[in-house]
Image (tube, rainbow, N blue to C red):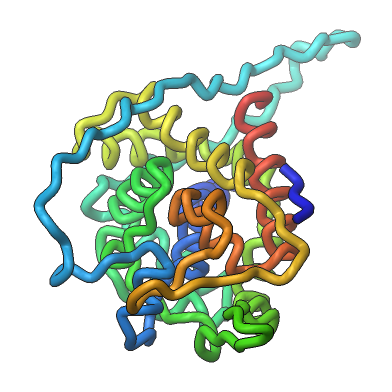
Length: 288
């Protein structure tokens, strides 16, 4: 098996663009209208009623530092006449409070996007708080369907049997094409640059979860690293069904975190595209 490892408008773009990254992951990983326990368990999203009391050792929260962009002073090569006054720079608009930030996000997408895939998400409240919580889950490798309850991909998860084995239908990959196209339309360098403009709101949301700024940075980078670490499988994926749940036949694939297994379900080409975006975003964040 082959594996390969202007003022307020700029502010609106700043907040909405970075939040959109988590949003697209949310659309991608949403279980939505799946009705059977098989689908939930295969996704790594376990329904509440089957959770058992177990002792869970939480992984240590990663820490990192996303450097702030430096402001370079331009070299003046000509003398400015004394009577000429340089135009004043427009003041950066004040950030809204975290409680009042939803309108900012909704206004951005109402003007900049007509995607039907985002409409349901925009009806939610506490969008930035939800983004922080969702990223926290992704950094741990989990998909928090309750935090971003978005519409499911088109169609249903399907399999077929051949030679006494269960195989994942390649047609499943196309269910994610629309979501992937939205993600690919985002410029990662722009998102990284504008991320710093709304950082106080994100820090406030992460602080409510008990995280310090360096831990927030670590969570964001760990999320990207988890995506980049997902294998790209070009051959058909073989499944097994020991009881009622579908699992990957390859035990190494089954041992992957739910986030990475969901990327496998999106198909090799879509996984490559998402990883390319994640790589560009990581590079832009660390090299502002």
